[in-house]
Length: 378
Image 1 (cartoon, helix red, strand yellow):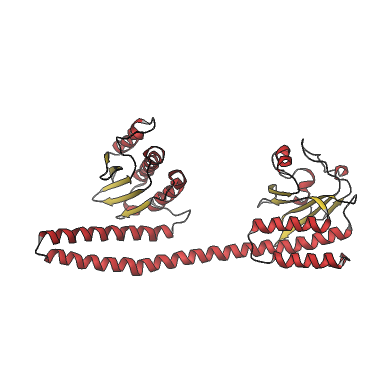
Image 2 (cartoon, helix red, strand yellow; image 1 turned 180 degrees about the horizontal axis):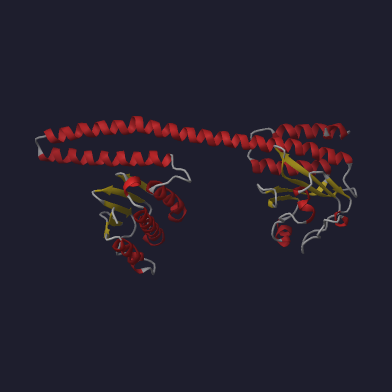
């Protein structure tokens, strides 16, 4: 065990304390920075780094450094990928300690602008018996080379780091599983309580609307029924959105994923709702044009409409697919920042290619309504 070679009781206590801290539930980037800092402090190294290998163990995919100024890092240029000594542990798991790293046969020298370094200590970090990366230390302050005790200290720290990295991975997996469980539970609760309750209220209001004698009351009740129907569709869409994964097939998943990806450009969350069996009756060819149309419509909203709110509705009823995009922007007749037509030619052409129509109109209270309708059967 590395601890047996550590004679300094103060350093031994410190490496034990560091080991205990690494086992805490902390985020992986913080943990890795702490590993480098502790290794430098324990050995008196001027510079420290951690090279993290890719999943195949063939190159360094991430390189974390401590001790270099921002100006020095900028002069050095791109991060290393594993040439020379930095890639030694891609094929050899043994610790490497050198008085002059330039004398090693694997040394390839320093890039222009890199500070000169002589003494070197490289210790692999293993996670589940696989090399995760290498902890590098250079230029021991006050001495020409690192000692046996330095190596033992860093080896002990590397063992603790490997355990801590695996611990962080497990914590992340547990958190991810908890999030998925929470989303599933929320979706079930929404369906079992909110949707069913709204549905029951809607049926009651429909009955009252049919029985009401006064036309004004009947119209008001009919409007409430419509509002509740819209609410049910929105809640159902939210339930579906909670469960959408990266590999979900279907139109719903495609629309939700697209809207999510455009949120940073728009600057706000777009409400999405569906009506009808959109995943089963909308064909692949229509779905492709639908998504392309939605992308262009929302891009136009983000670039030209000066909107702060928007909604998307996809409907599949009566043999037709209907896409409606509504925003609260400056309207179809407003200034469009030098973009005449808002790409309307493309939107209309996509509809006509599928024997459908595209209409753009102003919205009461300000904004624009885009209606894109095509037959389901092509």
